[in-house]
Image (tube, rainbow, N blue to C red):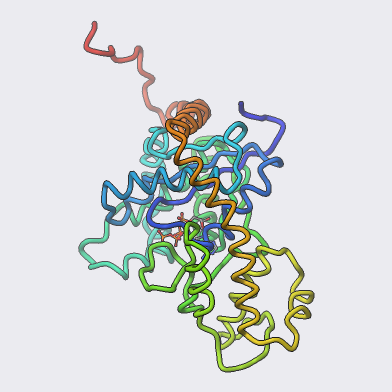
Length: 346
Ligand code: AQP
C-alpha cells in the first residue's frame, strides 16, 4: 500500500552487468538503511540498459539477478515496491511525452552521454543513449517522488529531471513534484580499484577494476590487495590525484563502518597500505557474505522472485497510471471512449 504520510523515493539500477560495491555503497545500501523513513519504489531499469547493446539472454538473467540482490541487500518486499521498469508501460509513454519537451541542447550537455558515446563508433550511438535522462525523468516524475537516492554520478541527470519537471509545470500547470537528489555523504563516488581516477563501473571490463556483490571472499581479497595505490606511506583522506587510490580505499572503509575521517585516520596511523587493504577486505566481506547467502536462498525459492516482481509492478502501475492520465489530459490527448476489445471479442 502507498503510504501517504511519508515522503516518496524512487531509484533504480541497470541490469547491464554485475553489480559492484560502487552501486552498493552509492545507492543500494542507503535505500536499505532509509527504507523505514520513506514510501519506497525501486525498479530494475531494463529500458535504460538497452541504451547500449545488450545480449537478450544475459539481460533477462541480469534483471532477475539485480531484483534478487535488492531483496538480498535488505529491502523488504512486503513494504517496498520492487519491480522491473518495462513491466510498467507508463514509463515508456511518459518518456515519449517528455522527449518532446526536452531541448536537444540540454541532452547534448550530459556528461554520461558524452562519456558513453565516446566509447562507441559515432554512427552506432543510439538515440536512446541521448534520451537516457528523459527516460530517467519519466521514471521519477511518474511516482511524484520527493527524493531520488543515487550516487554522485547521477547528479546532473537529477538536475535535468528538475528542469524538465519545472518546464512541464510552467507550460501545463502544476503537475509534477520537483524531486531532490539524495546523495550520500559517504560512498557517493567509489573509484576503480585498477584506476582510482575513473568511477567504478559495472560495464568496465578490466580485470581487478571492481569488486562485484557476488564475488567470493577470496576474489574480493585478491582484487583489493592488488588495488592501485602510490609510493608514499601516509594513510589520509585526500583530494590529491596522486593519493586517489588510498583515498578510495578509505572511502570504501568509511562507507561500511560509518566512522569519521579523523577517527579512521587515527586508526591507521603508523600502519602501512597493506594493513589498510586487509581492513577493507574484512569489512567488504563482512557486508557481502550475508548478502550472498540470502541471494542464494532466494534464487532457490521457486516462484518467489516472480511473485515479488508482480506485486511490485501492480503497486507501481496504480500510481504511475494516475500521473500519466493527468499528463495526457493536460497535453491535450483525447481520452479514449472505451477500451479496445480483449481476445478479439466485440
Ligand atoms: N562508482 C560508484 N560509486 C557510487 N555510486 C555509484 N553508482 C554507480 N556507480 C557508482 C550508483 O549506482 C546506481 C545505479 O547505477 P546505474 O546502474 O543506473 O548506472 P550507472 O550510474 O551508469 O552505474 P554503472 O555501474 O557505471 O553502470 P554502467 O556501467 O552500466 O553504466 C546509481 O545511483 C549510481 O549513482
